[in-house]
Image 1 (cartoon, rainbow, N blue to C red):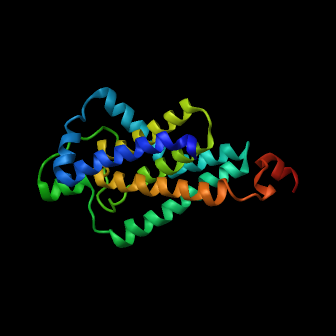
Image 2: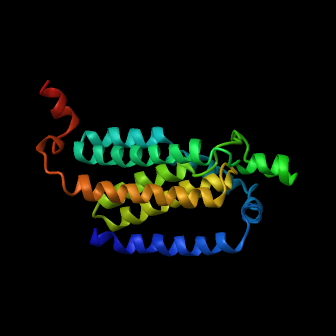
Image 3: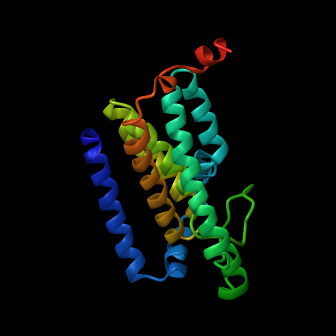
Length: 216
């Protein structure tokens, strides 16, 4: 974990910076500032496709690919993702079910039109926290912790930020939604790195999916 300290520090600095913005500005004001950049053809395309890095299906596919080289790595990703997703689901659907997404708030309360990216379906309910941000940080931080290549570590960190921020750029979530979602995903990736990936010594995890299937 020591070799990941610089990347965790970068994440913490970002949290402090964004946290300061959240404390000193209203979420509607923040969203207006971000939405002002929508309409740039390049940015629209980047964020429209980058948002899929936060899909649960994408996390599952990555875990499946990893299973062909290491069951341990695959299980680590799955445990981190599903643990974080379960926690988020409880928050999103039970504790904070009445928090509306930007599109709904701007349409019915602020009474201002948001700029939208063509082809993106706008949702209205269950805004907090962002499941995509959670998934992206759980997945990419797992990948970051598992590799020793610093170029890949930096890439995974950037992809996590990119996928998470896409949710606000596309007006699917408020900035605070992705902020909290990223924290949940990161904490679960750290938790299962400590209690599972780096500690559980069972040999059944130190194999590959083809080898596992061949034994049956």
